[in-house]
Length: 474
Image 1 (tube, one colour):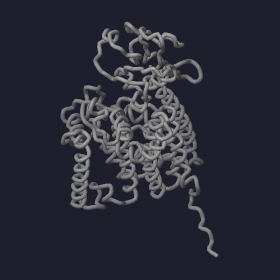
Image 2: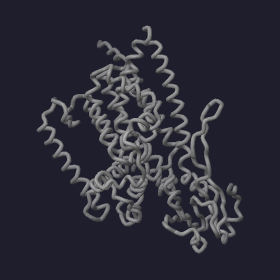
Image 3: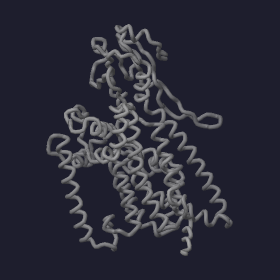
Image 4: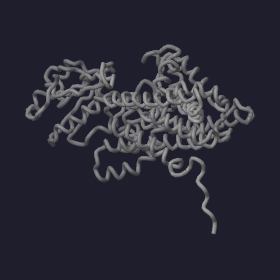
């Protein structure tokens, strides 16, 4: 009778799927608690909605009415739409509000991102050991941004799944899969041939799909590259100093893992060939004046691997003189990181006043009378998407550049905007949004300051609106 195989060191259920369930639970919590999307995600979230609900009726798609500054590719939106379509189909049959389709899409994207992170985690365990794997997961869990962003339909997050996949192949030693041209493990000629063939296939695919969707011959990502890197037009949306990624973005997103990752390169030389190209990537991106964390979010998993090596070394030497103090300090830093992530989540939770305002408006007016809601740019950018819209009798307008005095002449039932007072309309309620963090002489020492961000107005010529009970505006 064959003897059962012993569990691998650090193995078992926790090593198999427990770590993934822990990270998945945190990511799902973020998605459910902060389900709305902001302006950076608007193209992809609207595209996914239109693919799921309008299918081949491209003339109804949002991007034709609101194309944005530069065209974007539909490839990522198509992938997530296909994966989430079975669940959305069932929800539509059950006539469940579209908001739950948004949750489905967000959770589907999170699953894709986390599955790629699992592949990386497995390779970290094989190459550096189960302790490094455990600290890699713990450091990821106590950071806010990576798991919070994992479900957000941004081009950078679509790419993050591919980046994590490439990292896992890299650690595994599949050099052609990661195009490791800087290494002697694959010849430069092989790498060039692989790069050229892959590039041509990808460009052909995106040109074919996006030319159909945009109704003209188009390579969207080239236009984005030209707009951002060559013309440097992205700087019109704000600029940061050249060192911002290293002195602000990475410290805030990685917290305790940031100093640990730098030490990791000194303690374990095995990580240097992997960290160095990623470090150069961040350096090159620092040349662009317009900077956002999402642009370099693909670097964080690799930096976390390096940090996990430092944490593992401190753990292994925790009983030695000197090392024990460093280990205690590291545990304290873990708690500080967790507290910082909690505060950051609370701020993000209150950062979608537009979505909360439209939800409150739907709940307050349940009449069957047709209603037209105008949504201004700020409200649309702070949480409102087509997934938030209800079916008839609700109708919506995002008409732009309407002078404030013009609203009195228009026949909108409700207005959602950032103005406290508008002629011909009564302010019905206001929704607060995050403003800033304030230090207080108490425990906890930080508190969130909120202020009214979005105001709901009702047409004073409609007696049905005035007959309802409204909380009013401050």
